[in-house]
Length: 173
Image 1 (cartoon, helix red, strand yellow):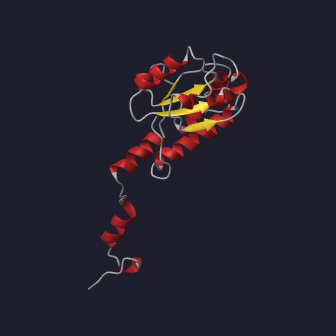
Image 2: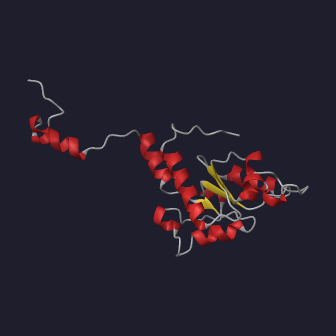
Image 3: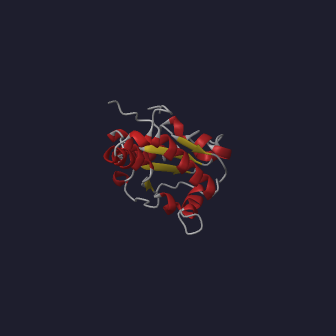
């Protein structure tokens, strides 16, 4: 006798319990879900955008609601770098070194117009025209400086990218 899986009345009680209570997923899906809901950003503020990044961690905006409150002082304990502010040519090798010290998988958010394109200082001889010149940036947050809400939106955008890695193919630089 064939059992019709589309009709719940034809399932036995045990089969119905199995169907309702067992979740099937691959290990990659489970790990991506866990990674997406527990970013540990490294504290790396270079200019005025860092003030807005700190405000996002405060009580008013509270990134702890999403599981992102553990700002790490060491790159070896972090999986997310938020580049917040102007990157000078003198600072670029240090930013790259901190990025290289982070364990895989690692993600980068460029916060503010200075981190994205050099901002109003792009014509200066010492300003790098964007973090994407030497880092693989995953999410760009525009603004001068961007509000804490924009940082939260960027974190949620990165969360969606990490949960669905096949939807967005990441460039490796």
